[in-house]
Each structure stands twice: as C-alpha cells, then as structure tokens.
Length: 385
Image (tube, rainbow, N blue to C red):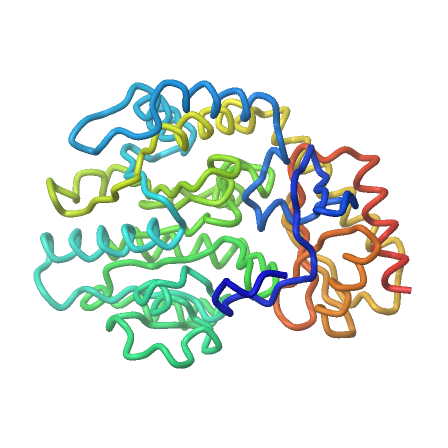
C-alpha cells in the first residue's frame, strides 16, 4: 500500500487495476466479486460498454466547456435528468454530493429570506444523517463522530430523532426554519429506511408551513431502491432533491434539483461550479439515465434486492441479527464487529462495506446477475462460519 496519501481512509490491503461487470481485478491478477459498486457509484458495474463508448466519444469531442456557455451534451443530460425526477423543474450541476447538499441549503435559505425576511434560516436534519464532509455539510450531519476536531461549524442546523413525529412537529417552526433535509434511507448509519407515516407527516408539515422539503438522495437515488428516486417509494414529491454517486456511473457529478417553489431562487452569480455540467460527466450521465430510468430495469433492481434479503433471512444464521433495506441497498446487522468480516470476505474474494460498527452494507451494481449474487452470498456464508 502506498504511503503518499493522507491518512483519511481505513483501507483494506488491496490495489485494483481493472474491472469488468461485477468484478474487480487487483494488481496481482486476483479477481473479487464487488458488492460495493464503489459505495453506490458504479451503478452499471465496471467497464459497462455503452458507458465506456460514451465517455471515449465525448473525450474526443471536448472535455470541458466553461459555464459562460453551454455544451450540447450537458443540455441533453440536464433536460433528461429533470424529466426523470418527477416534480422537478430546474437543475444545478456540480461535482459531488456534498456540493449538491450545500446548494440545497443555500436555496432554502434564500427562498425563506426573500419571502419572509431574516431569522427564518434554520435547516432541520435527522440524528444519524450524513450529508457530506465540507464544514457546512458536516454541520448538517447528525452524527457526533464526524464533528470531532472540526468546529466551529456553520450555525443554523438542528438535529431531531428520526421517526418521532412529535419532535418533527415541534422542530418545524415556521418562524425560524427554512428547510428539512432528510434521507429516505440513511446509508452511513446502518441502512435505515424512514417509516412511511413519518415521511408523509414531514411532507404535510412542510407544505402547511412553507418549509422546503429536501431529500438527500446521494446514496439512495438513481434507481438504487427500485424507484428512480427513493422518495417516490413513499409517494411524496419534495421541493428539492440532491443526487450524486451513481448519477454518472463512476464519473464525478452532483446535482441539486428544484421543483416549482424553488426553481427560480438562484439568480446570476448566486452559485457556481467550475466543473459542474462537465461534458464527460454529462455524456456518462445520459447513459445512466437512459439505462436505469426504465420500468423493467427498476423492477429488476427490486427483484435482485428481494432475492438477497430472502436468502440472508432463510439462513437463520446465529451471527445475523437483522436484514433490511430497499432494492440493492441492504444492511445486515451482525453480532460481531463488521470490519473483521470485511477483511475475511476480502481474503475470500468478496468486497462488502460496513455501515456502523456492527452492520454490513451491500450496494452491488445493478447489472449483477443472479448467479453472481448466489456466488457472493455463498462467500459471505462461508466467511460468517
């Protein structure tokens, strides 16, 4: 392992050289079945032919156009993305999930300031949430472990317990709150889906009080849960949606989309991103949209996720305490620390993730086959003993 990188990651002892489909190959030629998809990024797997072709063809045309202008491919991507996100009207393109969430918070604050004046700027988020690693998105993240050593933080964020409708009602004070930022499924804290009644209550309170309802779909969006947006599975239409990770299948991208209320909040020079709307990311994103935003493809994602969950539950393994999730976003609580299981699985040729100290996290590529699912679960069972 190279020692030139800063000490920001707890890395496993492997260096990859190439990938194909649901498989990665290390520098020594050993193959690994990938149940991580780069933490929900490589949604179409590795080396997906249409994605490779689109990126190569776009690189031969132009890599970058500054935001004084538009590029044809970025216009096409933006138009198709807005159309895919039901209820959204406009999009800002950036580079990452943190950047998208920063944009969402800025929109909420300006919307409230222009309509109601100063003092109505707070953003409510949930305990256990994860919204990014910039100072402001750390401020929005409801987990103390990410805050250590980095204060002071951006003022104006309030954390409340998920699932507590009474706490939600109290927190959404129309005199002080501009927006509610919520993950339909909390990823980093253990793959924790929100309750249906809670999401519907949040939508109701926000609509009644003119507080912007903002869904962070960085990890759970773009088909990951079996609907294009995870919030669609709850039957609600937010005012703002943020996307990143799988949106361009491995090329850095972020997006904040706004519906009718907030679509025209940003004005010239209010926000910007040097690489936002990059033609390479847009070309890749078009392939993802055209592949994933398809009823049959989304149904297959749900079916594969159901297969994984049903198999895990059928084992009745003493080390498995609980299995939950939606689509191909699955958490498995175990009786032992998660990290040694990741290490043991790696040695046997399976890549998995953790989500908290005792939870395994599976985010396989959408293109994984039933046979590969069986093979990966077989390795996991052998690993658990």
